[in-house]
Amino acid sequence: MTAQSGAAEARRTDRLSVGDWLVEPALNQLSRGGAVERLEPKAVEVLLALARHAGQVMSRDQLIAEVWNGLAVTDDALTQSIIKLRKALGDTTREPAYIQTIPKRGYRLIAKVAWLGDGEAVSAAAPAPALATPEPAPRRWTRTWIAAGLGAAILLAGGALIWTLMRDRAALTPEAAAEAVSVAGVDDLPQVVVQPFPELAGDPSQVPLARGFTARIITDLSRFPELRVISPRIAVGAEAEPAKGPGRYLVAGEIERNGDNIRVYIHLGETNGRALWSEQYDRPYTDLFALQDELISQMLGVLRVKLSNAELVRQARPYTKSLAAYEAFLRAQSALIVRRQAENEEARQLYARAVELDPTFARAYAGLALTHAADRRNGWATDAETALAKASELARTAQRIDPDVAETYFVLAYVAMERGAFADAVRELRTALRLNPSYADAYALLAAIHTYGGRPGETIPLIRVAMKLVPDAGHLYLLILGRAYFFLGDNQSAVAYLRQAIARNPDSLEVRVFLAAALVQAGRRDDAAWEREEIRQLDPAFRLDAWLKSYPMTDARQIGALTGALRSIGL
Image 1: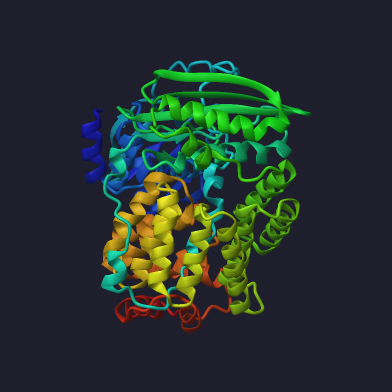
Image 2: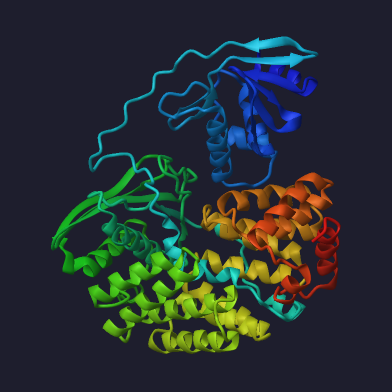
């Protein structure tokens, strides 16, 4: 059967068999011998796409184009669907009987497929012959640079928690909208993808060092307006695929600490495979900051970023001269991004320790401010206004110590928004973006402000810039995008993005609230009722009126659309 004939059969029939499983797309389920596995609709659509091309390798781009039909989604959406399919089918990546991963190419369905109509098999595709799988490259300094799940989102840990802390009480005015940062030309600048630096020793205690080393390179490169720095999708065993072409570069490396020494390998090349520069360093651990400065200087020289030596030194200077303070700071960053109360308190103690060791450590003060803002946002503070005042005080302290820390202005923007000073918030965000033109969270916060103020159409270009800069930032960017589409009346897109957000964070009450409303508006009331029960599981005392009192929307039409949809299903 050709792919075209299989597609035609898929449209004409409503069932098929894949191996020994019966697939019933209309019911979103698989069944075999009395066992039933239910799947999300997108996972079923991925299976159908693979079945239409049974035995053929489909690239990730092909699958995304066919299943998501032109929607801009991250690779993670496809990865999650493949994971769910394999789990339902009882398949494994090591010895697949259904879905085979073809390294650097994509996936193919290797089980027998039969399209069924009126109880009869009308067409079939035989099992695919096995393809030779290349042996993995030796794990040496010349290895292929594969992301090792170290969570490169640490580069934005200073902001990643807080841009969800959006609480503007004032409507978005035309004057304030005019202050929004122009996002034109992002794709025209040279782009640098920085892969996470895996630590080589297999020692979990070294993970913060590896993350911090990666974050330092990303942060310092991000300061230069001549560059756009991209954080790739991170998945265990998956390789990020940055855009290829002129002006597209990849930084990768490895790091290992052995007692008092540190070993680093770094490689800079074009994404088309051409190597530009590589170096291996064996240095005392006490030379860590000097080594980072040297690496940044070398890379900028290769990338021909034209800056004076004085400017280079100013931009790439270390955050602190105290290694102990830096280590406490890195541990605090790791705790902060967990976004739970206990870890937030742990982060606060570690930031305080970093400040104690180095009272001039501006980024540690900014981190402390973020922990108090988190208390305010999540209801962990007994006095919300006191928490907000503390966050403002600490951010101002960081600003006085070092006026060039972008995260400081992010915190100040949030505090201003909470107090209804929207123009001040936008001004702070503009400063943050001037200091760090690749600061994705600043774009995301501006995007959210537009939706809260009743202008969701202006959210879309801003959040798409943020997603270009950090394609795997987590569920919050997807929430911002899905929420904007909901208020624009594009419920199909809203459901697609909000489901992706749920896949990344099933415990997000806010995402489920908007997903339930979007499903109602899309006419999928049974699915909306399911989300209603999930909301009640997460918060048995949930009441819509009480929830809205603490929610920042001020536009009456938006409030009416949300409440009308949710009340129709009993919320």
